[in-house]
Length: 192
Ligand SMILES: [Zn+2]
Image 1 (tube, helix red, strand yellow):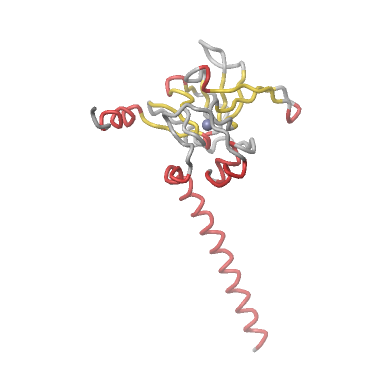
Image 2 (cartoon, helix red, strand yellow):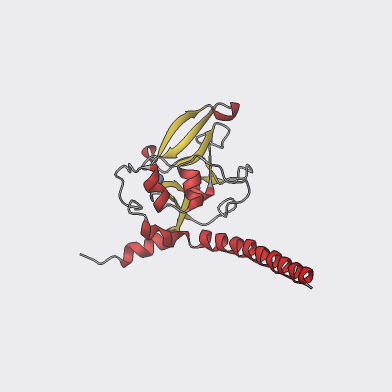
């Protein structure tokens, strides 16, 4: 009888563990969908302030969602074909998810087939910083946010005209605002 109850406990535990891992998956999905709400904890996030951001890694860790911190500050790479922006065709502007700096316009986005959102031109010269990257036995050029130095991805010279460049960007580090929503916000601002 004692043995039987032990088996029961074991079964119950296995069930619990399965439930745990299941609910963890659910949580991470909710976290991604609610990315915007976490910005309230991020004191440097602004789509209008262009002053440079200089924050310690410790502080970044506190204000960024884990997946954004991994890409932005630890130069991580998201798995290919996982970004909602990969086949995204809405008209608007893409911003740095770490600081709100405007990075790309939707009309410079193209389908590169590489598995990550791709653009042929940044929104302005200063919106991006270029750094040589010799890691993983490759000669590549890393692209970082011009305002907060978040790692965005890499730029390659096999893109379409007019620039011939392909900015291969991690979707996790991008925020998107529809052109119409931006216009609406502008109109809703109190007139002076
Ligand atoms: Zn940034």
